[in-house]
Image (cartoon, rainbow, N blue to C red):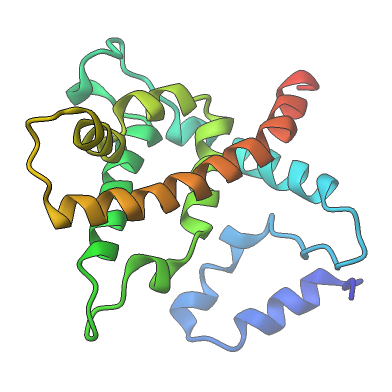
Length: 183
């Protein structure tokens, strides 16, 4: 179903919540309705990625003068590699009282991060400084590492997270290339 008047729907939606959330309505003014199942998704994807680029591109860009100094990195990738580590760690430490990160947040975290990494051109920095990737590669290649069940579980969970991230990156890459080509 395509909504003809998105402003009415948006105002109805925000009226369902308290005043504090209602006051945040202007921050969501660029949101548009999702495409229906029978609609072509590519224009929606291009538009969504372009909105991410215009809204957060400058905020999330890397401004460090020395990309080899990890402590000086200020871009989104510097924050996301830590969040990704915590995401995987929460997943491996889940129990009956604490649901895992995947159960709480799903794979949308990786999809959103992939979009920001691509529109800010930080995919290579993310690959270089990924904490999880370093742990897993060390675990797989260093013979002196003791076979630890926690690290083994970490590697298994990260494999899933990495696959979800890689899927999002490869899905978004053509759309991001199009955005940068026609800007």
